Image (cartoon, rainbow, N blue to C red; front, side):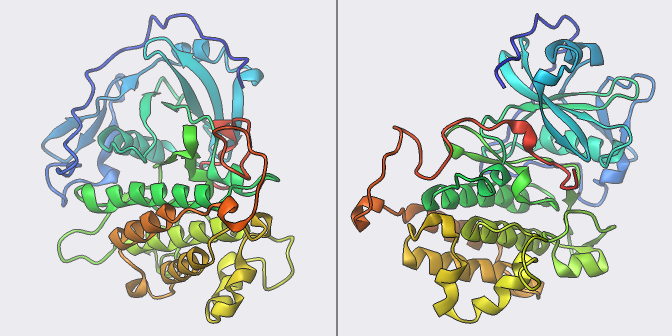
Length: 394
């Protein structure tokens, strides 16, 4: 939505020294020790709500060096939150597009509904997580506003919208682009599971939370539900069940016991959506086909039926071997028993391989007119960031 012209300079924006990003070989430490680093210990300095968010562990304090803005700052950027700057919204609130002179870039500004689904705790968790975690496949947090009772988050702008936008539109993604997006999302999840210390369970992996930049580069977004994973001898963390129906692992939905394998299940559901073009829950379909995983499970048992699972919009333009391998791996990820699901490192290896096995229509005697630099079967216009339902219930 290009009607939002660059705003005037922000006199009230406070710049802070950027975080030092650890080398890729080092693990970003989310606290002094895994045992004391808990999301419940996040606090806002109530005497100055627009100051640093502080991680309180009972003795030490670790400040979050995210840039802070006043509500007035962001009202200027969005032209007082005008409708022509609105990108979209959901149960969490609304997302607007604006231009920040202080960082010289277009941004997406999420204004949380004070009566919405994302509360103060989720807001604090998201600021903490995205301030400490940095990876090419995680969306970047520019800053936040905690001005009075206003809660806003400022992200980098992702011009191609969400994966959900592209999967369920008339112009679908081609096979190569879908596998590239899946591989990138897996790498972002690998960073959370294997590089962060303690590991981070994303807990909200779904197509609407995978945002797409130029070249369909995927980034995970919306970390309000993220939890620190089990450490030491613990096998899981217990928490109230939250997330989006259809994506939640069955053992988590039934017991509230959350593990890294819960994210693997969600990834398998996303991979199935990419391959089949079906929604995770689609009440317009006949009984027995409304739940994607329930529909797919009996078909997984007969490889001869795998071609029936491919997105009809692909019109057969996919590598047969790649389809079989992708579906077999998706079946592993959505196993009912968590122990049977692969580790995230194996997921990345498999998806990186599948993304490297590109399908060439011309090699199969198929030709089509495609605009230069545009992947086949994808839209040619940019999608907005804001049709993303970052809470999944909007």
